[in-house]
Image 1 (cartoon, rainbow, N blue to C red):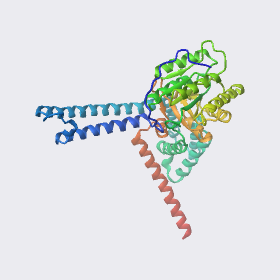
Image 2 (image 1 turned 135 degrees about the vertical axis):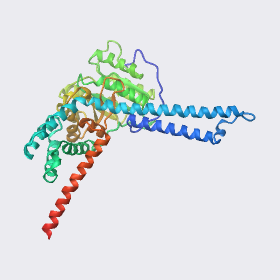
Image 3 (image 1 turned 90 degrees about the horizontal axis):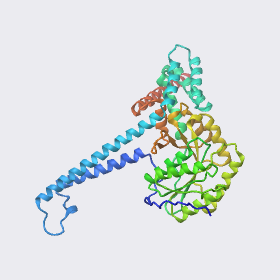
Image 4 (image 1 turned 30 degrees about the vertical axis):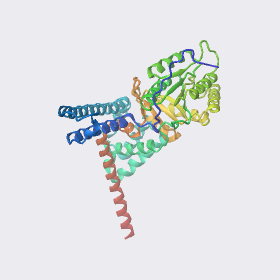
Length: 434
């Protein structure tokens, strides 16, 4: 049997399972607000003399000075709670800004190309033709591009402002959101407590950021999900891959199963040993790394199928997640890779890395629309906390460069245009009927 020659101590990080994992900024905001509200309530009770039962002295009556000190203690706690709330809200803003910064290159290129269309007095069809080129160059895909062009053409006939910059962006925003929000299963499929470990199978070509993603995901699951996590170094093809994953396990403070020294065999025994350890050690999560490979490598794809069989023997229904990691710089090529992987192995979701270093972030749209594979996580930086849940609205608004208020104005403008078009058509229909 394959064992870990240097097993790290088991770390129990709690037993709660949050299904699904909500965005960290949302959860932190709720927790901080709840805590501050409770502390303010306690302070008010203290002032009214209603908090005494919570601080009853064992014997005799509490001196007045002590009561006053307790009131001040409540106020100190309220201040501390407010400080925590303010700090957490700052963290929320930082997270949103990080996501926007990660899409800066994609946004700049796309918006520059888009603005160039409207700085002229060309006719409708000529402008639409140029718009089609811009959308295709942004890797949004042919189907989504044609839908947007048709929408703009229809609106522009009765609402000329549909062809200005904000008009096009309003249509674009609506179409992108409809596509990205229409896919189900964006949350990680974590098993309920007591039903065995959740097995997450991670694959992808070399250089995509697979090992880094595993480390960052392990960190999030341990800290935010309060999960006990075990990593499996299943990439036995490269000796350096095991060392890299061990480094990430140490950074994320989770355990890892590795091949013995000088191991020359395939990954199946290593994965089998990891699954057995996860079962015996009552781990909540097992994340399995695999050898980097191209999507069209038949032998390595067959190896992946054999690994999955080893997992299923021990944990029926596993793996619960099969995630493909792709580099955002691949653009449209990532869609082709995902299509092949999905046919060969079956994917439950994708992780897009290095969005902060590419101008081709639009490719996530055809990936979701054409393949029906949800984007579950995105990497927007080098830090261990820079693996984020994929939030369609945040992604689209960051791509278009809009904040919440501005996005709301866009939607209002689009609703107004659609209303005028509908009213005109109704009037024309009534006139024909008369």
